[in-house]
Image (cartoon, rainbow, N blue to C red; front, side, top):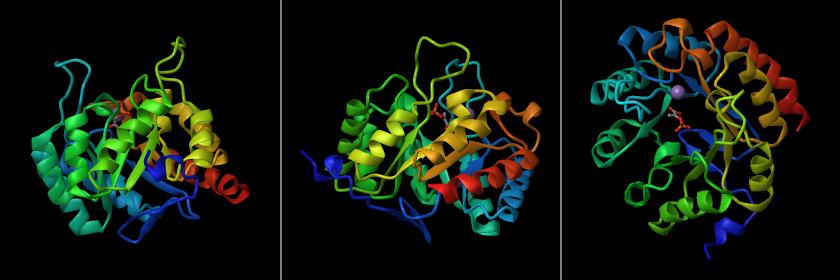
Length: 263
Ligand code: PEP
Ligand code: MN
């Protein structure tokens, strides 16, 4: 068995000048999907003002329905590249197949593997061979052992720059979009060396629950957060109901400070 999977000694993942799994909680934020130049530039400007270093934004969207907005694809990546050049933000974005991985590798600082692809083993092998930091989201109904086995596929190709992202799992409870498994966060922090971040947006599916879940995640030792933020959430093409506007996000950051200090 791979050492790191059983090794609770934190092994920080360095991205640019940022460390995941060090002493700081790293908040990452941005829209669910890249929609337009105006939208990503507005986000980037607002995030930079708030001291955020890593921006998210989906260019390739793995939508449940083929009728849902599928993302701008490579054009979306080009908009993200513009943001990176202008605002110096680091980028995390999802890739869904070999083509999007090849395109994403040119621009992205962290390659996101989404829940729906957590067990896409050929994609995991390819992202392992690429050798860039990977954000590996937990599968929709994956056990911790299945999730760690997926991480091992990446590790087996020689890439140990893996950040795990708990984003809620499918349970019998319909009141929230998913059920955030904070027990998993605490367990992983004790048993496994990879940094763990939490996505309270996809876990809850509701804007008003994002703050409480984010605070809980930090209290449980999360090394970072992935939060959906949009200039006009009610106009978003995707996941607006769980997205915060800039003001709500700024308030959340303030509310996180005392929690982070207390851990
Ligand atoms: C996302 O973060 O854009 C996303 C699609 O999330 P998940 O893979 O967790 O559903
Ligand atoms: Mn989303």
